[in-house]
Image 1 (cartoon, helix red, strand yellow):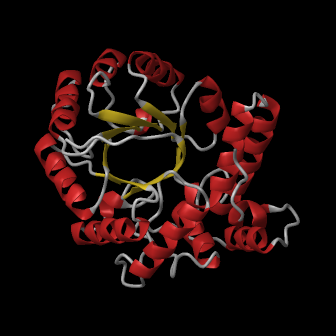
Image 2 (cartoon, one colour):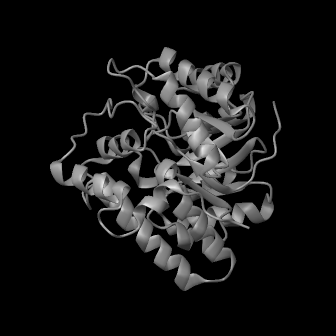
Length: 316
């Protein structure tokens, strides 16, 4: 299995650009990669939840990864979410991902998993971690997943040396504390917070960085939150977190996140990164969401979000 050196910072669980026919749009992928690099993003996770990976055709996942790797040329890490319903299928997808140019295989809770006892779940993940040709990222969705291992089994799983990073989207303090305890045993393990509405607290607790579904548009603010936490400026980090939360709610359609994928992609169309806001999940775009996105990007709202969206952060 391949060994690579991973670091924290800001990672992006990027959305996938689609054309009018619902297929991956290669020119938009190329712009997406260049935008992430310009914004100082460490790596991208392709075909994740925000990337609509579980709903994409395999051919489109291949197109997506090959295009991103070709443009990236080693300037940022390329991870791919490879989850399938059995270890053997997930291992096969990891092999495919490696052939296409991915460097990290990310696995989450399977979508349809019968007899999901704690021991069977542990066996699934452990078999994958031990057999994967790529370093493994463990994507913890916590209670948002229909299957969740007890902490004892999760702790045992993370002893596997090929698990190189964790994306913690559990929003569970008990899992946060468990991951930090494992990192004391395995200092090489990279911990990335996936709860973009609570970045500052995870960073203050000791996480290495962030892996955000909104990383394609909130990377500048995310970098500034990291810098504030590392400088010991908790109040400044909290203020930046509140600002980022407000921006995300404007893009996603308010507290109910009713425009999540459509709002995100509409913003990227207006930023001239994506060609369409087409999404496979059927999210609507309300008039109020469209207005807030347009005003944020144009600067008409007077809140200064335009520079947050377009200008890289000045980080040490």
